[in-house]
Length: 406
Image 1 (cartoon, rainbow, N blue to C red):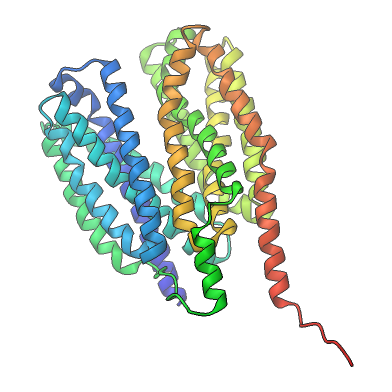
Image 2 (cartoon, helix red, strand yellow; image 1 turned 90 degrees about the vertical axis):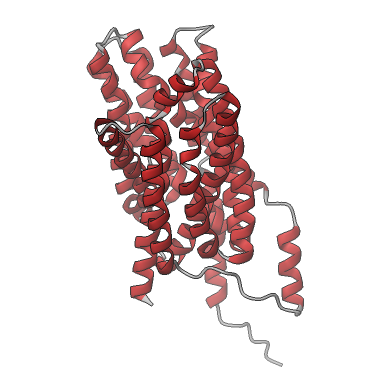
């Protein structure tokens, strides 16, 4: 069993890296696709909403299927579909076909995203220690791989269709080969006992309020992540007057700090608990983005972006892990709610900051992110409540029965 568990963990790492590389491949080809289709930045921004809506819908569908069939059944299908549809945006000749391609690719990628996270929480439960953050670090590694492959295919003279098709073909093979190592996660067959009736009734109930609290926190954290993705380099260039080559390093600094933090967050969570990772991570992120907002020095801005990435790095994995503790029998559906709302937050982040720049300078608009991080830190107790109840349930299951002497 131990060997199969290690194999399942390794396979889950591969799927996270696959998801990151597929999204990263689309991102690195955006400029070429935008130029070929002949659309403006504003139109592209509107099309990205379709990508997000498709992903949100795919997450909801895959989450329910993961609970019904098992994440190990849904995950390979999501990987194959997402890899297959990656090439569609590259083949799109006009605005309307590109819109449809992004909607379809978003749906399939949402299926992959939620099923790999649903499988990850089962693997984490089997390990009985925090490992979720390391999975999310592999997503970031996948993005780096996509960037390197994109540079290589462009240097070789490959256009978006051929480059994206090559990555997609490799993704199909990767998804199929890794499927054999996944951990069976299908729920046990339904019973006819009173306990079985109560279990089925529980699944039909509305999700607990704590799930929506986790989803709102995920939306706030991922809104901050999305804002950093699109505005970090522009901040150094437009506000601090840094050269373009120097400004580009701002996002690299943020991304490197986030990847490093995710590699370390599991150990910190295991020692101090998930609430500490969320609370003090959000505080660190708030300090970092506040420094970015007020500093006139480039070196301090780099430090601020590094703190921002380091602080945010472990937040979302803790929120995903908490969904299993709230309702284990509906982990897939609950992850789809948390991840879906978080994904919409990530897509809206750049737009929200862009709207605020019509009212205040860009660096002052970042103070909204400070506020969101502060709210997240304040609300981090939701993880303590969930884990506390889980520990109490475990303790209760090991208590000896009470004897009533006559």
